[in-house]
Length: 401
Image (cartoon, rainbow, N blue to C red):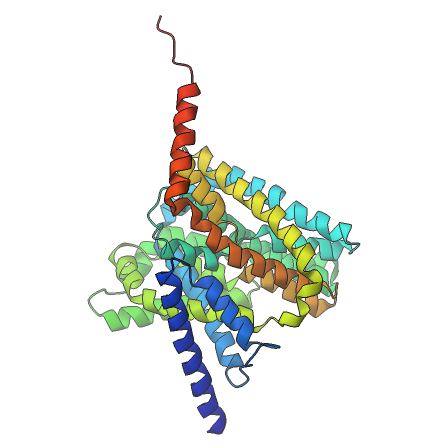
């Protein structure tokens, strides 16, 4: 009973503190995500007041938070829109790999690390944080913007790629050889394709089993199905986040609309827990020695990620303001980068990789949401409009025959 009492006290105090931080952030026009992360650092290992009794509980809540963030993203779009956006964004996805994975691999080689560490760091710098970006888009009221489907398409390509990358990197780090790696990759491919087929072809039938007339039953059904599919996906070595996203895609019509309304408060609660847990798992004492290399890598790959977003938005005819918003929104790295670094640490590849990855992710996940707000400022809008006007003025008029 004593441990349960301490857990209740710690969780209650933490949630109340997060509520106050969120209120402060919104009053000063700041996304609460960086504040949640800093709170995690303050209460984590090596922090001011470590949370001992509730750490395992918060870890489970953090996993649920990522799942809810991704299923809410999936609920915003139908299966048809997903396929259309994936086809349109395939070139951007290829550019994303070249622009953001290769710098990570090259950076590891410059540090004198082996090819396994280079492969790991390539994944860390490549994949953006779907959870963080989903939260930022919601906080800034951009879910209905024209550039948002482009952003989500890039994220979906990355998340689906992680479904193949994670089993492969796990096999490589475990030293099981080429055959074991190919077997793990084959399981991942079959699983993802099967879930996609079910989501696209039978999404309407799945939704028909749920009734919007009973809110309690609908909430339990959607939440239960999401957690079940995410758990099965994780058991098959496919990302739980990918499974949750595909559940959101499979649900459509009134079911998706009502589920979005009911899951929003739960998403906000567990998403805050996720960002806190990320800070809790980081010891601030490990950060200073790798801070400068991590800062240099973050500046480089945040720039290349912004270029990826601008290119993807420009290809589908979105105007300059939307291109800039897309580029800045894609900057944060998060949950997948931490998972990849954790695999490397468990295998003992490179001792400095963990603090470097932690510092890198923290830099991008704190600065990314801040930079994403820049296009909303009046001075920035004025400069963009002025640049667009100058570009139109410099364009020669067509000659009449």
